[in-house]
Image 1 (cartoon, rainbow, N blue to C red):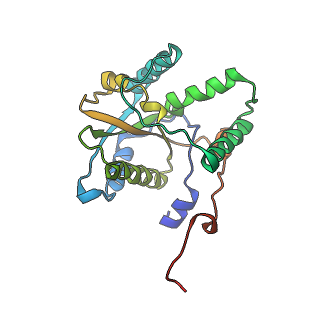
Image 2: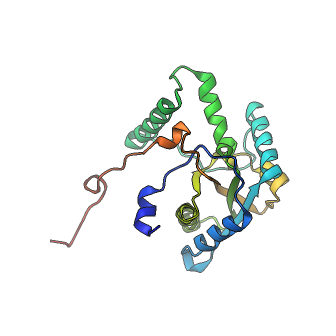
Image 3: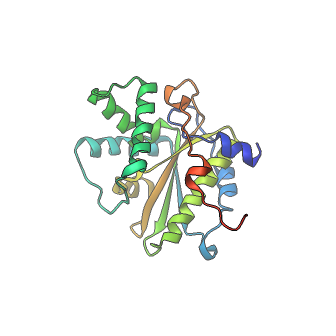
Length: 222
């Protein structure tokens, strides 16, 4: 798969086959992805890959924490959007709920959908990306973003799908207890990874993109 095709076809996968992803395959994905550029070549990312019984236990603990109304023990950056950004967020939810047959007033199904994110969309593996707490600049967050994209693109070469999400890190104590993430590390983002179930309704979603005319200004090209 060439780069242009990967960029055009990458999408967020929210339904996975139960098939195990071999450690060797994920290792090859990460070896490619960690060629990502980073500020001053600091390569600030700390990577934790979880699967099997460990992932199942983290899922259970996340569900317990969510159902008990527990709050995150540290600051997790989440943003409330406004204007056109809020509209795009709402439009995405509407599209997903329509595909999943979730009615506007169906609180039970909406809650079940929310829980999927805390279960890493039931993927057979998940990748947690963390930073040393001393690395708190905008540049290091950008570095993590570049690595996320690289993982998503590299995964396509092996027939894998991914979904970048933050719900899986909102209870970091569970990750520290069960996946060995140390206190000096701050989970920043996670990715569900596995073989896509193309029959799963949400995977049929194709999100729109704004035209360049709407978000790009050009100078000096006259």
